[in-house]
Image 1 (cartoon, rainbow, N blue to C red):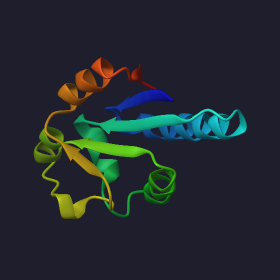
Image 2: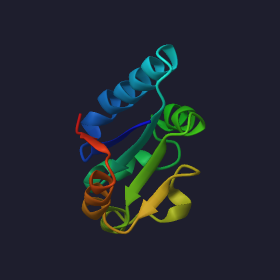
Image 3: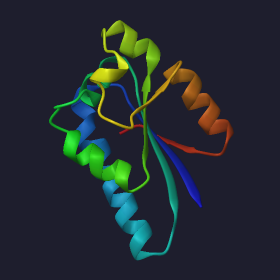
Image 4: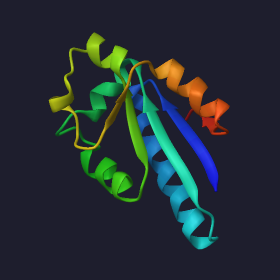
Length: 113
């Protein structure tokens, strides 16, 4: 199994990130490779994890495919976003930068689109 964490901290990078993740999942299916994927959003990028964002349906599809999508609680607080504002099944982590370090120490490859 290959483990990957994608890091998004700019709203302009969501389209690229989501496309990269979809391409990776498709590649895995075609080549019998299992990917464990997490997308970590911090800074202003957490805004796109709110219900009714333009990426909600794509995010739902990725969640259905087993992708973990995590939001930095510090960033949520800074943007005045509460858990009920988020798309269902988005995970909140206490600090995005700590999550990135933890995942890298667990063997996750780091990708920043």
